[in-house]
Image (cartoon, rainbow, N blue to C red):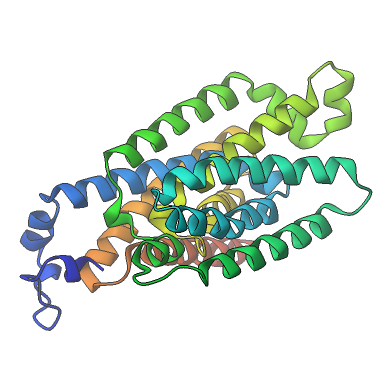
Length: 291
């Protein structure tokens, strides 16, 4: 929580709610990194989330995020930075799940449920071997956007650039793949290659966001902004821009809520996303009512 890091900010005096105190808070490097990281992750989540929601991959990203507990536990046990364990683990896990889906006749949600349950079981067992202080583990489980460093920012920015270049340069193919994979294959688009490349980007996006948002809430960054944007537009380009904008805006508002009310940063951002979704949903329902 923000106020736990700054002893001069007292909750009972509501000091941080004063505009000047909020401005003072923004002078701290950790707060600047947190806001920059939140915006980058919001934009990244909004960009990838458009394709995640339309391709019905929400459960896939949810499974990858929760299965990351294994990578976190391994990192703590091996006394390595959990972030560097999360990156290869989530990548390999995402590719392995997609391969299993392609190689079996079972429904994809069945495969995801099976591997998610197995990975969670392994992760819980591994955590039982962790002795002493478990702060690193708890921080990754529940997220701490104030703890992100320059390396985390650079990784997120690099992944955002790569994702934007890949998806926007092949936007026509991506849209066709989203609408009808059979037609895309007939037109010569390498469907499998695009599917696996997207899973790589999605898995890495989950990995770089876990430190800030936590395993339990990371999927919200991919699903809620895109779902909110979908309610506002049926045109793909506008849908994409709105999703990115909502992801970035909700991150900024969430950080302000966290600072003003001394709430945890990750849940504050997700709460703002949820409230925005409910507001947009309510407005669209009201407009649909007969006059």
